[in-house]
Length: 88
Image (cartoon, rainbow, N blue to C red; front, side, top):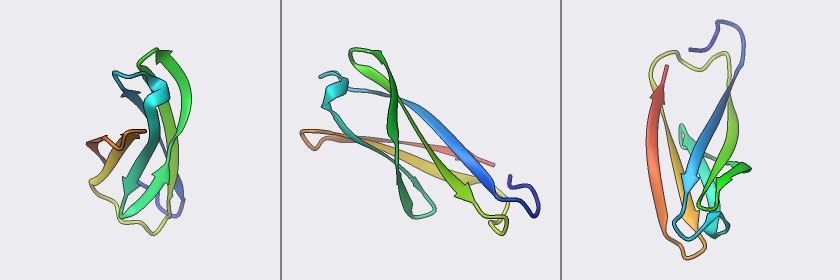
């Protein structure tokens, strides 16, 4: 939850896999509160998986409570997969 009267940065890391190899992953996007944030590749895990990272800021006026983020990965063929997680 946001600390009263302070902005908070939320850092996200995700392992993204593609059976055709990490070079086949074209974009990884984090969606929070209707806004998309691009994630960047941090490191390869192996030939088919990589760690992607991203961040977004919560203003001090953002309401406390449970919130949901969605991560969507797309490959160069246009196929995509999404995963959703919640945080407080």
